[in-house]
Image (cartoon, rainbow, N blue to C red; front, side, top):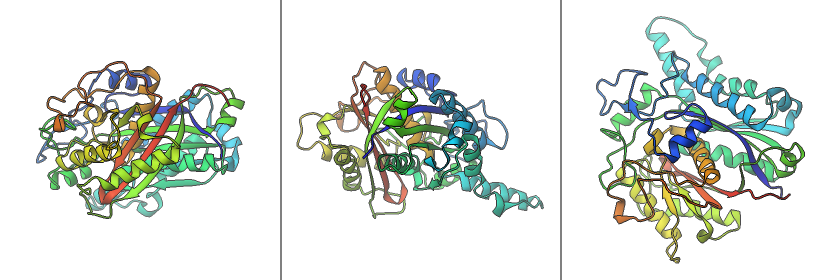
Length: 390
């Protein structure tokens, strides 16, 4: 089995347009949730969304991919030509929820306006667009496991690297801010009336966000051979499904607990060795309550429970790509040694002391990043600080 490391990343979301800005915004508790300008919020429960206001026009998805892809390549010290030279030794894993919906929406608008479009031909061209930007000539896999898609995509890349199927992989995802998602969650009565406050007793729903986030995942040997900068090592992941309800998670937290436990066992460590958990933490009453129960189950035989928080208070819920952008926040928190706070937190759920509204210094050797999605889809990634050696 080979060791897998992350050697480059590129991000764009509501509170940042590059990884350094993202690091500062997250660890300083700066929210990018604001009044929406991408579309009219008339008739919705809220006008607050995690929008990146630098993106204009109808091609938000492609801009999110383009900007995060360019930064990832530059950060990894490679280019599309280098990736192309690897041939089938590089693969791409793309996690998304709304990329196909974006085409459905544009197609519906075109039909309503009496215009024709090449709907079937363009349905999946976002993946082809990303593939060409990165220069990937190997296999492409698209994960659409609801809001666990981004985490699942990185987990699949990890599996391919450690099993020697390829030496380098591009993994991550993108989802644009779309009115179709806004109306969908509005119909579910799941939108927050203001700015969301995950894990707070007064939480009332989500803010929808948007992002693009991609990583270079490669074998440690390959990274050392090209003298790459190494952010962290991926050591385990878990996938699961509650088989409980189409939208609601199992309130007992048992499904989420089993997924986290799978990641911990896969990584060959004990729960007590985890220093930080990035929770799914949407800000909805049911999800947050379930997730806290799941974490309690993971630590029911331990006196130590790690610090945890949710990035959604800062960037909103970025749908299928949320796990990718949140993994980036965990890696940057690990490398900067600063906790990611939740600025709106005033009354933590059940008096939980592992949550904070303020940042502080934290040493993170092991971290877990969680995604718990509709239909019970769940995924957890376990990463470890890289301290050198081969």
